[in-house]
Length: 152
Image (cartoon, rainbow, N blue to C red; front, side, top):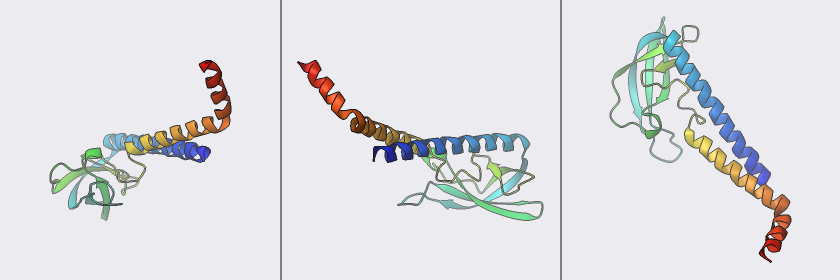
């Protein structure tokens, strides 16, 4: 059981960190190389409730005759603090127009489940719990004997 917690937690923490790094690099690239387009904010998504996800916005934009729509986070990890604007600028990848970074810094991948600092912390806690469980399971008798010998 300790091994499952350790490997699962480590996997979650590493996967979230890698995903967040890639999303950040994508945002930097699109800010530098993307084509600015005005997007319409058509829906504010309140993240209250079980399994509802974070606060988000639905943005729709037109680029070279195609219409694209996606959900992005708003307000980062703290959620939306006020009503979102009616329009916002997005920088679109000319090679892949469905990929963008919005003026608020979020990308088309920002609403993904792995894109949360809390996943890294949760994964780290599960990995630590698993590591402690493994140490106790593998070396518990020796640690107990050592502790008793020291107490004498």
